[in-house]
Amino acid sequence: MTAIKLISPVDGSVYAERTPLAPDAARSMAARAKVAQKGWAARPLRERIALVRQGVANLNAMKDRVVEELAWQMGRPTRFGGEFGGVNARTDYMAEIAEQTLAPVIIEDSDKFRRYLAREALGVVFIVAPWNYPYLTALNTLVPALIAGNAVILKHASQTLLVGERLADAFHAAGVPADVFQNVVLDHGATESLIGARAFDFVNFTGSVGGGQAMERAAAGTFTPMGLELGGKDPGYVRADANLEAAVDTLMDGAMFNSGQCCCGIERIYVHESLFDAFVEKSVAWVNALKLGNPFDAASTLGPMANKRFAKVVRDQIAEAVAQGAKPLIDPAHFPADDGGAYLAPQILVNVTHGMRVMMEESFGPVVGIMKVSSDEEALRLMNDSPYGLTASIWTQDYDTAAALGAQIQTGTVFMNRADYLDPALCWTGCKDTGRGGSLSFLGFHSVTRPKSYHLKKV
Image 1 (cartoon, helix red, strand yellow):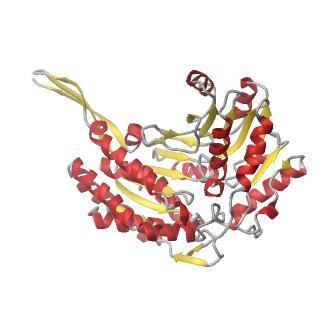
Image 2 (cartoon, rainbow, N blue to C red):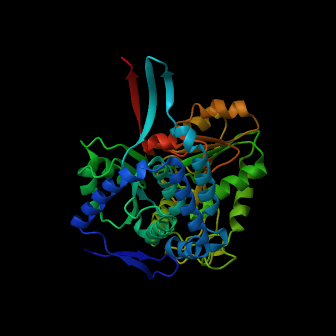
Image 3 (tube, rainbow, N blue to C red):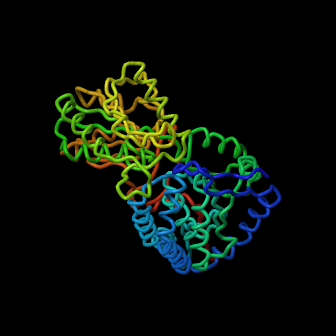
């Protein structure tokens, strides 16, 4: 088997190397998970909750190591301390609602009938996790899946190979059986073969649209349910009544944090004409205050992109847009660490149109286009002129206005006066080419369980 190499964006070195499972070993792994799942599901719910919580506690105890490894693997500056705030908040919420959410719904319990709806674990859940928020995205499904009684097989992105190993270390040390939670390294062929052989009872994939299409093709005819979070091109809309300072600060952070490598990052902004000039001026100042550099430098607020090929996509989009008439407002010379490779200077573009790739295709990097609009109707038309639908950020002073506009936007989540955030009490979902299914909230448990009806009659 050809080894999978993790090339660090920090210095271009091979940071880790792993050999994928051979076909027979992959099939054996899946078979062991199916056997182990039954015993795991038979354990009391409170015991499973306690073990999962302990697993996350063990992960927290590895924080220093995890943060350092994340910087080497995908370039995030160590000053941000990893993903532990979200990891803990999401775990705590899902653990707290588990008993109520998974409890049977009693329809009748009389001397003649006992009728109720129960929720039953699907079986083996296969998680294919991405590199951009490698712990958060994996735990979004891992936590509810294990709590609900499923076995879990985790395949992490090649850019973050060590993340799955740390999660397995933490959960196994907590007492989750090795066959109940397995971290594996698989190539595309083995992955597709296992899905096609119905080795899994649910597949959760976070990644590209092309990757999601490959997953669906592999599962064709198997009726294996899937949760797919794919591409995004999330918009922000700044109305005339917006708080300008807050809008600039939040939307620019949403566009640039993690070097723009956020599933729900802000990639295009529409600003009412009355605020446009001031918004752009303040946004340029905000971005120019960033520091691009080595992620181990405490002063760095932007690290390298996870791979130089990802940075090339963004550079190509910017160059193409400028050739078509877009105006770049950030001087790359202001960011001397830009090396033409993984280290990429941030950019703001104006004079952009929806005829440019940078406004229509996912960038997943530190670039944002800003357009002037004259009305809500124009902003709505532009926000919906996209193949994607994950989140949309509306800036206004009025709840009712935000809700009314949100009802007309084709998206999974509507934000008012915030962006790039996951609330564990709300379902994380999308529409159009962003995918289907949902995680977090009580619906996150529904994704990894099936309803089962009981109609019991006394005679």
